[in-house]
Length: 128
Image 1 (spheres, helix red, strand yellow):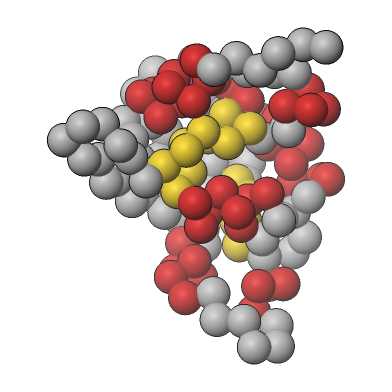
Image 2: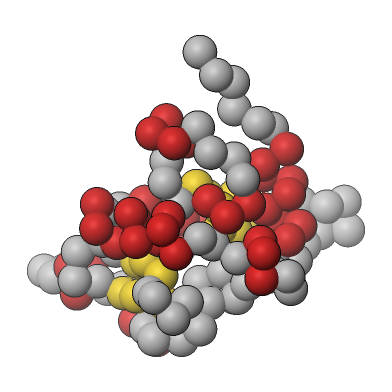
């Protein structure tokens, strides 16, 4: 059984400058705690891929929304928001304002999310 790389989290949040790739929130305490966490685009249990190109730095709300298929990233690195979040009594709030906005990316594009990974997420999890 392959073990998860504990350096993945540190690397991802550092590459994204402690900012959520989708909503842009950046909160960092003086002792280094941050509101963002590292998210795998293709889940680790499926890919065993801890490379930066399979990761996004996401706040907890965006991470949950991404994992649930309510948000994704498009072919032009834009934020995709599913209409499924707007049903019944849901009130998705600011998430709707993020639609079509460019994501925040690492400075070096070699660390940007791989389109093949994003395509996998869009096909398997994201629902318009």
